Image (cartoon, rainbow, N blue to C red; front, side):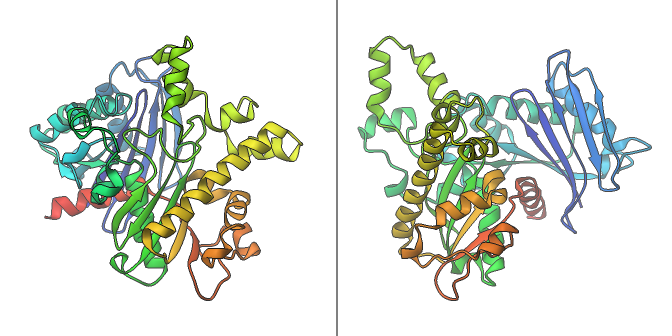
Length: 396
């Protein structure tokens, strides 16, 4: 069964075609700078063929049409025609409190996505446009929406409720939703498998660390708590986002001459590692290089990043009443042995101990302890998770 995964962003579309029975990818690519003169397509297939070319993509429909032409191309394509595709899985950022799992796309589900525009103004609109483009291009091929918020809807009320007037929260749908759910779900399943157990039998702390960072406590396959909130701004220190912040800081800034738009831009785009280090980059590799070069601001940024993460791990150990494994994933989590070592050096009280050699080589299991929580490094694969969910729903 061939499943096409579509991830439509604000100016780009990523696509991957899977042969889901073997869980192997056949082709993947990215269309960038949609609706600009500089639009381009990058493409590669499982045979090692690659190309990049300029295209005209004045709409998501035109962009995805270019992806279809590449997939069916006589020389570097991987299918004869689009009818070989059994289903299409769409990544959707926000499904609100109504959606607790992946859903077959219907007019009702499309309306839910539209209703969540206010909660995810940067992500849901292009997600929706990607869906409508595929409806036009693929006609009768069934489509599934896989929501980033869905996995987190298993949280108990004590974890997702904000301590503000209940009527206000209800009116404006203000509660913890969480994000990166597809990634956290994938690595939780993979982590349980690595431990030789079913996900329903383990307690896990999953840390998705990239430009965006979030951490989740997973209790026997259900989310007990997660760090991101109504939006992806809450929680850990990130590349350009501040994470947890006294709400009064926003009030103070607004009362001292900053507009709401200024503050929104500041907290989401100019804070985090970028704002703290002041080196002109939010890339952890650049930050570590600056630290090694003696940059004091970069050192502080790194310390704040690690401290916040350690604090959340300790909190989630309490929420779970003990845990079986800590999982690192995402660009930083998978690739930075330095960050993993710094984070874990203060977690000995939880029974965590790293084996330095395994950490340096990014082994699956990098902890040295015979008993107590394991530490795992698991590359996330959100596209495969979306393909799995799509195939599962089609089969049902």
